[in-house]
Length: 447
Image: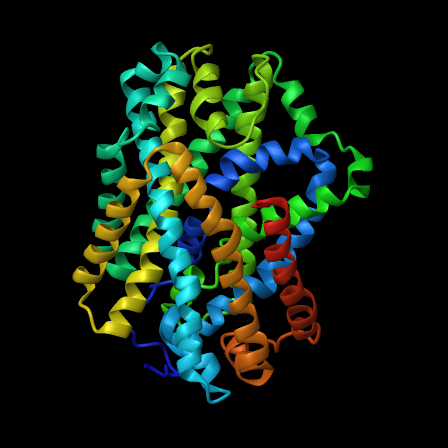
């Protein structure tokens, strides 16, 4: 198991990110996903409007500062991804083999979420083609969506999503990840900003802004508001105990991890807000009830685009930007798995990516039907992902300990870590990670 080089630039066989900008954009690409687009806008309005943003921003600050930093730091410290990073942590207690076994839990979470996510990205690509051809605006949106979500209803598009992500990884590793995100993430923000401006000009859009911005202060007295804000922040930042570890592996020792973590959290939050301001005013402008989940994306919004001038163009822009968000997230899920298999089993880069893509497609074809896919994603997102994230938090901040992870976090910084960092990490963040896991089970999902 590679022990990493703690004083020099990591020399991983997959290369390293060429710049902090490339690293941050890759991390933002991983974090920005469907939760930002179909869940965040609805939750803001449902749980207090602007009042919801108070606990949401609070949790984003905590999880961004110490949660993302933990995953970036252990990846860079160990010089390898999920399996090797957990082994490195537990080696500090003479139990490296146990660490390797523990590492399989978050790694399987990354593979599991990739299997379901690739199906959803396939739906997005199918909707994009429907927008380009105009079919999604001519045909009833509910029928169009139902055609994609039946048994084997979206095989070509599902396959295309996996192939695109695999090709970007197979022929570039870190360079492919960095180049893809340097193009796709700026385009995502530009396209969504353009949509938000267009939506602002719609008659009746003001009702959507009221839904999002008028604070319902009494909501802050409701437990569910805080629970949902916490879950939204946690899952939005892609804290999984796996995916961000592998990106930390490719980060230069010269970079300030805390600064990069804050930048990732800020841009992820901007993406969520952009989605909210592009979607909800349009929904209210046409008197359509807001909803969360796939119906918002694939049924409600096409009905909105059908009613506005140049709706076909804006529908294409919208689904293109969503496709960018989906593919960049899928790239991270694949990379977490592929790097660990390369390191653990000595696989070449291309065989590792091909194996990961093949498993993702083979299992995905069995659960393409929406109810099966939904049940699969519930199991992965309610049980495996948050448990993996909790294991990561404990492994870094309690098993490895303050001295060694603190040394890694101080690399690249002009000033030492503030004194409040480790108390926040150990006695606030780790308990919150446990609470996210337990409440996810109790609420049957909070992210």
